[in-house]
Length: 124
Image 1 (spheres, helix red, strand yellow):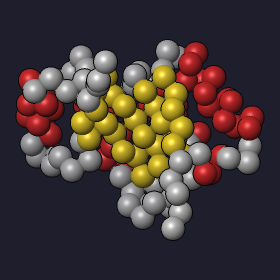
Image 2: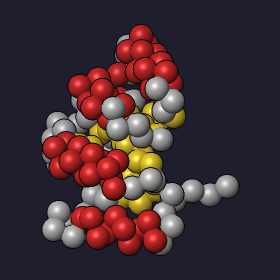
Image 3: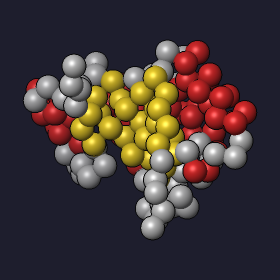
């Protein structure tokens, strides 16, 4: 089965609620939340994406698909676990040398019924 996860990264705050409604009507499966810390990647979207995810959790029955592009994923996981995302992805690079960190994050997610995924960003 194909599922569509629509990114909300570029939605304006002004029209956010209306855009979420339109995306639901268009039958997206999830809302994709791109969390960036300004360190792992250049942009910092962390506060805005938490606001967006919180709003979605209050106004929509659809789930969120959170992608943490951050140096320290543990700093962000608890905030998003509380919002019950369907999927949470984190970048492999910041934690690749610590198997216990990876397993702890995956176990935290699974214990909360959240599908864990890890991502790899090849460096040029």
